[in-house]
Image 1 (cartoon, rainbow, N blue to C red):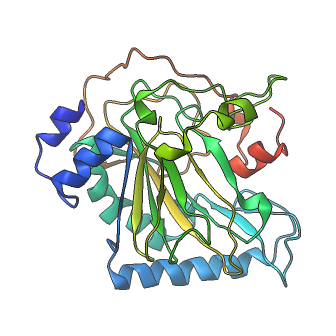
Image 2 (spheres, helix red, strand yellow):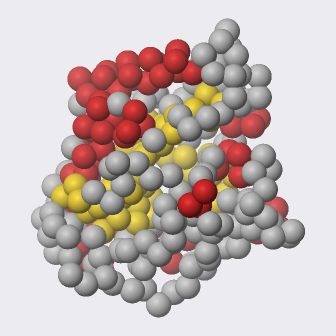
Length: 295
């Protein structure tokens, strides 16, 4: 659907002003959106998974852990596929967040994936400049990620930051000079980003961020000793169809969470870079950007 078509529908959760800001800039943040009871359930569940990660010694299909991770000092970079690991997470994905997605994508919404990223006061927790759509190309760019801060987030603990208007610009090459997938901009491209147009999306626990899959974004390292969890859910409009393998599918991938399936796909004429073949599995953006993966 086009922005004008989406905006013709009455909003469910967001204000019309917030929707218009998203379409103009490629992202928007909303403070204190998640009800306290729901937030508490998510926080408690997340704490349980951090404790569970103490039992692993290396990254696996559920946990992505950083250097120095141990039972005494857990460094959980990412909880993978949270929607498939806990009903609490999936209820949130198909509930409030799906309602938010309709305000940006229109009435017919498909769930794509979820993940839970952390910050651990370590220089390796920086997520470098990148765009999402090159990880999972679709026939059009009605693809969004909705983040929910599970802890108060400010400049001290690594907020999500995005470049205004970058969703309307070109897509970047996210392979390195040797042809390996890096999942990020080259140093040269990153240095060219106009930082005066960057917005840092901060907010209390329960605040959300929404960004388009073309939007250029990153998050700086945390300076806090406390972890900063960010629960991310990705959705597409039903008229956006994937044309590469899903990086990490679950039983919930491609489920219609609002509205109905559609009879016609919409094709955006703008090109999209093709990622590696993910059918053999996928680790995480941390592994790609740090060079742990060479694909």
